[in-house]
Length: 425
Image 1 (cartoon, rainbow, N blue to C red):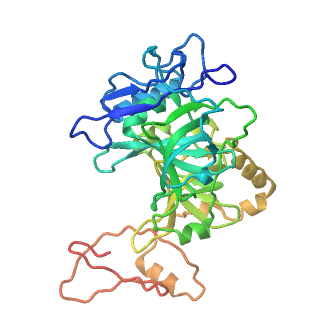
Image 2 (image 1 turned 30 degrees about the vertical axis):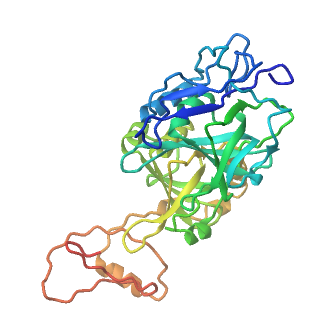
């Protein structure tokens, strides 16, 4: 029991795996450590209720699979908390502020086991799977503390059913006992060199402290030049905010509609976005990010003008290193006009700087024109020709064997054609 008379949480866990079990499999048995003088009316990650005994574990949980995670997600989404009795002979260990260990912030996290407490807001979470087999590795989380430091957290597949149903995006929590490890080098979504992860002795509790002010979110915005420099390096994934020029090649207007069913089928949306008065960038949204954009844009009646997408991967699409494009990832989130303070601020700037925002005519951002190779060659020979990207569709009429061949190359980067077994690229 806490000093204010409320049961905070319990849940020191010990996992026992059968021999030969996969490293990321769920434990076959889950036991609660005994602790005297603790009420059996306990909760994990949920407000205390006098009439509710909330189970913090299952006697024999099934192996965690993708379906299990979906079940956990649906439990969280619907707001239904898992319930069950906690026997008086097998009580959990409650966190009490006076004896719960030293409270630290994320910037103090180092490598190794921490028998300390961190307090945070859960910003967002997403699945981590092996690309080829789709096997669930665990749940990645993005957390923020009272100092505004954002850090990654990892919840292994074996612990998903234990903790995830009691957590929700935007919720405040305190975690006692965790492991600090080095942040990954590829596709990082947070600045700190260290991440934290749940362990078999971790204890999670809902944070009920009105005096503690924890920010709701924090973004890492990048512009065109920064994305250009980081292109194809598989490094940090940064956020982008800007005003929309085109949606799937269509200019914004009263007649622009979004077919959500079509997006659900293709699972992709292509935007052309401009940040303030910078160059226009292609923004490719895939899977969940595409669906979220479609739903939000349709709900706005096609009137949304500002978009914010998080954790984007800068890539070059097309042969020979094409134009810069930003691609969404599994961790990406999508916000429009009035969703968050950052989009509201940008929308305010946009309304006050329409002349700047309209310098680029959306109708000619991707202007379809039919030209011949000879016309392209003539364009490139002009001394005053501006840099431009062209997407060409051509049919091979004949291949003359034994003869030299050439193509129009770039006079700046000197890109050469590569002759493959069946193609010329």
